[in-house]
Amino acid sequence: MKNIVILISGGGSNMRAIVEYVAQFGWQEAGLARIAAVVSNEPNAAGLAFAAEKNIPTRILNHREFTSRESFDAALQNVVDEFSPDLVVLAGFMRILTSKFVVHYEGRMLNIHPSILPNFKGLHTHQAALESGVKVHGATVHFVTSELDNGAYVMQSCVPVLADDTVETLAARVLRTEHLIYPKVIDWWVNGQLMWQNGQAVVKNGEQQVLMNHEI
Image (cartoon, rainbow, N blue to C red; front, top):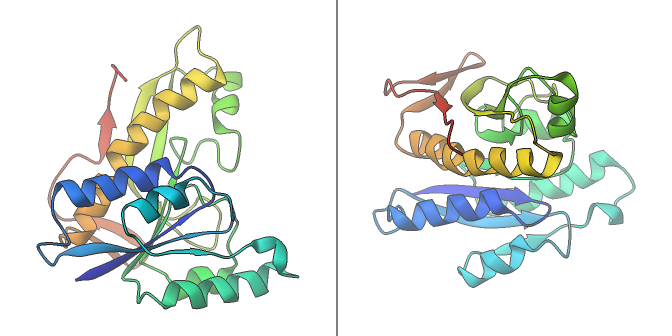
């Protein structure tokens, strides 16, 4: 049984999509994988209530109670390691992690970023996409490395940028694709089809690693 620990900071919509995917395909019943815990740095994160409703253990570690990023990450590592994680999933976890933390989980930590990397790293990606005039936007699932939004890409989604888009409408369209590609990537990992080798993401099942969705 593989243990997956999910880190959130807010509503956790990607976390919800992953939890529902795990339940839909009966991974825990089959002895494949389970969501071992959901951890938040925000005490009032709405996603915590959803996790609790699904009988998933939750932990809160308020970063404001720590004097440094390093001390918070050390405590976070201790909390995550309570659950013997095989995979750590960042799902809207709004913290930049220290190199020591990232190295500890190297090759077994994933993130989803709301842009087609390497375009628009960091925050406010949808505003940046609109201001740049690009016609295609999307999301990227990638392994986490010490360099922000720069780990090996696993899967990307593409959606059109429409002439009348606002930040909100574009964000909503991208988020719907995130809910499709993130569970799929975790499925590959759980079933041994995704591996981290020499800093690269290797997908061995031959499936398409780009989702082109012009109707979302």
